[in-house]
Length: 392
Image 1 (spheres, rainbow, N blue to C red):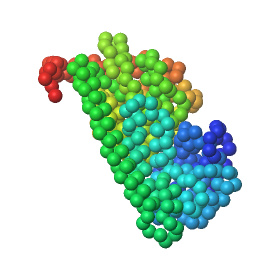
Image 2 (tube, one colour):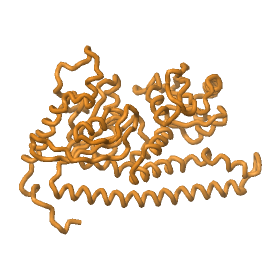
Image 3 (cartoon, one colour):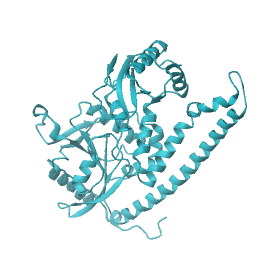
Image 4 (cartoon, rainbow, N blue to C red):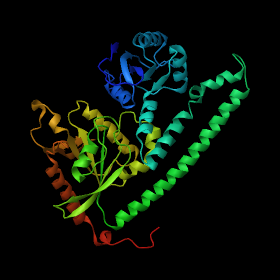
């Protein structure tokens, strides 16, 4: 099924979006999220095409007949690149480019491109660089396709081109090693900062959630900060930490805004962003922010839980914050602004708020204060004692 995407606003290169339904429950039949990703990367989707298959075609992912249809549709709309909503193997990507005679990218590469554009801190740039290098290291056959001209024509073997590819592969391997070493230093620095917070008996809270759930807007509303917030995917990439004073608890807590999660987040990014996501792993409480106005919020919550399991943060206590209450129609307004919601078989406290209008934020602050006071009561004298000065 193909549809035009003339309603997608914005400039940038014209791209054709392609999605393949393999019968999985999270398939986005409208390719809405891929379209938002493309726009976030500065591209302009002009048409969308979806099809059904039982399994990916080994060579072209979609089969030769559907590949012909993609090529015709791209020509009709003037698309200069094709974006797939699923991850492609290096061979599939190379074969599709030859068949379509157009550049082809997949969801993983698109997310990496967005992260590369958005990273601001030294740590964030290092993390993106590592993930991109890991991705490109498997795709030298495509990204360095210009080297094929150096091999001496069809049927030729060896020669400068082959040596150059091996050189590029070795250079990427060395760059990956250097970047990992630099990130290790960053992790040590963060670990030192966390130990200092532990010495001060700081209660730490991390905001987690699907991208564009409104985490940064909520963060700004709670701590009166000016962290960048926008109605787009991955508006925030770098962790921001501020002190939040809770009057009912009579003390401040440490509040961190982390990178948003997304379906099929590339594993390379999960690994590379371990240093940033460590803020969530070491938190005393997770504020799981949910876009209550999104009809797919249950699936988005499942994706967040999956990433929390991957980074070792699944057992940290959570408080669900269903945001964007102001965006819900009258018929969807909740009967209660505080209740319980089941997450992975357990009932978790839930609050409805609007970070934009401020509705429910006082209730949220009271709930956070209650958590902090309960944690203080649970501490034993040994827990409350300062750490020895000689701690490693």
